[in-house]
Structures are given as structure tokens and as C-alpha cells.
Image 1 (cartoon, rainbow, N blue to C red):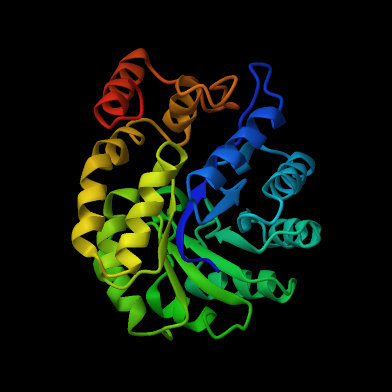
Image 2: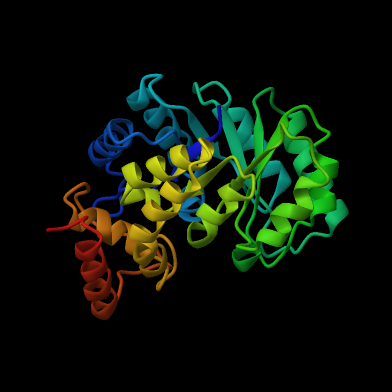
Amino acid sequence: MFTGSFVALITPMYDNGQIDYISLKSLVDFHIQNGSHGIVSVGTTGESATIPFSEHIEVVRRTVEYANDKIPIIAGSGANSTSEAIFLSEQMSGTGINGFLSVVPYYNKPQQKGMVAHFTAIADATDLPLLLYNVPSRTVADMFPETVAELAEHPNIVGLKDATGDISRLKATQKLVSDEFLLLSGDDLTGCEFLANGGHGVISVTANVVPKQMADMCNASLAKNYQLAEKIDRQITGLHRALFIEPNPVLPKWALHKMGLTNSAFLRLPLVESELASQNHIEQVMRSSGVLF
């Protein structure tokens, strides 16, 4: 169920900061029409850190409603408080989602044993499948392959989103987990290489802007047509780089607004609008990639 290209969907907002549910529906339709294999709703790209629980749950609920069983929905349920992550998971379990994505707790810098206890407690609180998310560049804490392997023994923990960008970490993890344990790339720049080395899919920021290309790349790679996958990936490598020259999701939101898919590029503080130089650069890359004409 969780293979291929899953978009780490942005959460669209009006200029007053309120959630833009009209644009949210348009984005869900956009991904269904362009072949995305799934959506991650209110993950870290969806600004989960600045969205209160009530809105978080409602955005997930609406995303499921708009998808109408046409595409799997994974809900972000990460928090640096285990009790909060459990609360979110319990509240969203009945929304119709297909699973959860939970990030390594940020700022706390938990020990490896702390990570095991944290994710075990979350997985115990739900019957839905749980994907772990390791992104040490943002959380500071790094979940080691041995820790992933220990957690993989839990029946509800089904996979890992690995955003280290380090293929050697993928290979180290593969040696310790079963072939059924899902390994998904969370680093767009190395995603194609990740798939060529046995990964099962991507949870992608770039897919916000070019969902068809990301889905096509994953389809080619999963069919072992690595030459085609690499060809598609080369066409969007500029986007992989450009979308991250400011903190995610600053430029993905600007790009989607530029494409006419959202009403605004608004971000909640402490994130602010992108610099003009960044906007000019991403626009140039979007034109060279065929996103804008």
C-alpha cells in the first residue's frame, strides 16, 4: 500500500493564516489526476509544528474526505512529546486514514532507547500501520539502523522514511530488517538512487510541484527500468535543489501559488515569505523544468 510516490503535502492557507480548504481540495484532486500513489497529510512539510491539534485533525479529515478512497492518506502524527503523539494518533484513527507517519522527537535529543520507547508507545495506541521518520538534519537526533530493526519487530510498525540522504544507511538498514519492511526515501535529491538500491518509494517534497514526474520515476524504478527512472529524475534535479534553498515548505508553497493551485503562499510564523532572489531562482528552474511556460 505504501510504495511509490507519496507527496509530503503542504497545508494551504489564506493570507490571514486560516486553512484554505478550497485549495486543499484542488491539491488532492491534482495529485489524484497526476498519479501520485499517496498523500501525507500534515506531516512536517504540512507545517505540523504550527498547526494546533484541532486544525491538524480537521485537515486530515478533510483530506480523507476529498480523496474519497481514490488514493491512500497517511497522517502525520509526530511530536516531541510521546503523550501528544499518542493523542493525535488516537484522535485521527477514526478519520479513514490508512496509516501514520511519526518523526523522531525534535529538540529533546532522545537516546536510542528513548526512541524505542517513544515509537513503541505510539504503535501500541493504534491498530493502523505506522511509518517511522528519521530526519536528523531537522530533529538533531539520529535514529540508528539497529534501533529501526528493533522497532520493526512491532506488528504495527511497517516502514521507515529515511531522510538522511545517505545510501549507506539504506544498505545498513536493509541488512537488519525483513524484505517486507518498507524503506522510503525522504530526500528528493537521492530518491532515485535510493530506489535503485532496493527502496520501495519516496515521501517527496518535490512531488508537490511535479507529481506526475515523481510518480513516473517511481513506477519506472519499481519496474526495474532504472535507465528511464534516471532520465526522469535528471529532468527535475534542478527542482530537488531549488525547493530547498530556503527552509521547507517556504518555496514549495510559493511554487504552488505561482502555478495557480493555491490562493496564497502564506506560512505561519516563525516561517516567512521567501526572498525575491529565491523566488526568481525557483521560477527560472520551474520554467526550465517545464512546470511554467
